[in-house]
Image 1 (cartoon, rainbow, N blue to C red):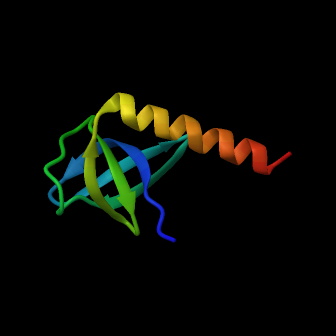
Image 2: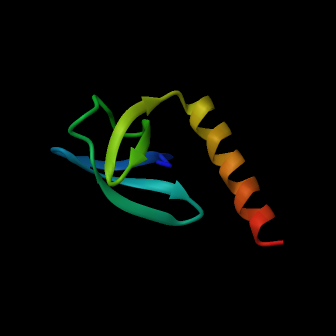
Amino acid sequence: MCLAIPAKILSLEADKAQVDFGQGVSREVNVSLVDAKLGDYVLVHAGYAIQVLEEKDALETLSLWNELLQASQE
């Protein structure tokens, strides 16, 4: 099974972006496959942004991920 996680672009330089996955987790990802701008939410898989998301959809997905993580810790 493959998983992709939404993240917000914090900074952008050429085909690399620093993204925020929430709760203080940030990473550098490759954005060469999408037409993304600073502040956009992107879907990240294996270090690559594979899709630009609407903010509403990204936040909903992140909320669901947080629920799953909290449930797994109980």
